[in-house]
Length: 71
Image (cartoon, rainbow, N blue to C red; front, side, top):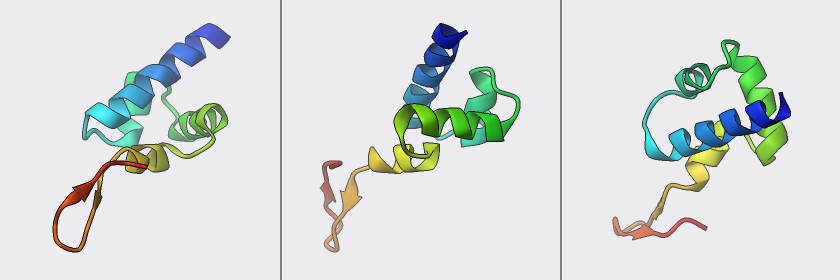
């Protein structure tokens, strides 16, 4: 089961970065029907929430409209 959970979380992480789908939809797509269970598992694995993970990969926008690479 641990291997399966790891694979699901890796797929979810990739989807968070590559698709605009909601976090709930991504959790369901990888096999967790309960969004709360998905949220807990994701935070336990990556140390941050799924929304923080997605936001950390977005380039920051400067005041002049240029984008900066993610930190």
